[in-house]
Image 1 (cartoon, one colour):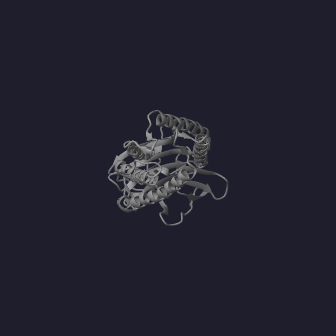
Image 2: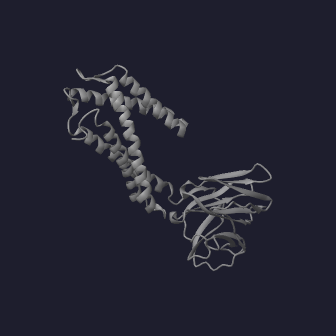
Image 3: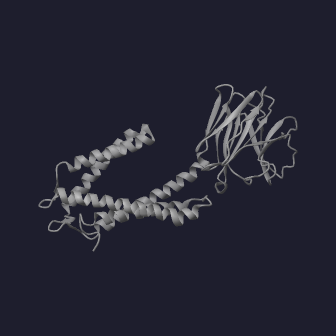
Length: 344
């Protein structure tokens, strides 16, 4: 029987654990994702199995190395199943360095948390070893495990990977839900059905996926757009003023539209920016920037217009007919109107 002898079955155990964990993580995350991309089927049918196979191969060769070291140096003394004195301290050092180093590279402030996790991980290793000794999980005459040990560990590992995939899908969806991120209290908004107002000023397409962004002049400001994978920076070309906002929830940036808008409270126009993300992601970000590059409104919304629409954002008369208002999706069944609040 496989998965019953140590160290003979270590390579196959690690290979199954790695391959099935990668596959389970990806499969569960795929099933729980609400806004699948157009290439999700390709990823699920081809790329995910390739990653699972690659993880299995790497883990298998790692298991061969562990088995070689185990047999060569007799890490467990068979007469009393006591590890050599340096095994547990070595595991503690490796676990601590791995956790602390990995977390430090991602988020330095959490390196202390990683050290605490590593400490409790070492205690868990010690606890498992005590159970191993107390219940004779290894039969001393041939180091054969009880039949349920490795299969049970395999099930726990795959279940943990599945849970992690589910949590990752939930985290991603929660981070992309529509929400008002910044509201200075100076603007109000309303959805209008069948908006037939004539635009006072049409917006400009500044960026489309695969092309370089264009600058825009609004009043005394001339701004360039610096677009990266997860953020957009609007930077003035004549001075150091700039503003940056995150676009992580969009997966990637498909289009950027902008239009200057005049509000009575300002001597210079404001800039309304609409960023549309992945087409099947159905998310967009609206940002209204003051002449001094202060963000008056940043909102993540569910995109209700089609990608490549002729009019994403333009300027219309506000509901009172006296001033200007920002209109988003004016050629759709409903459009979003943003104009100054009546009271500050």
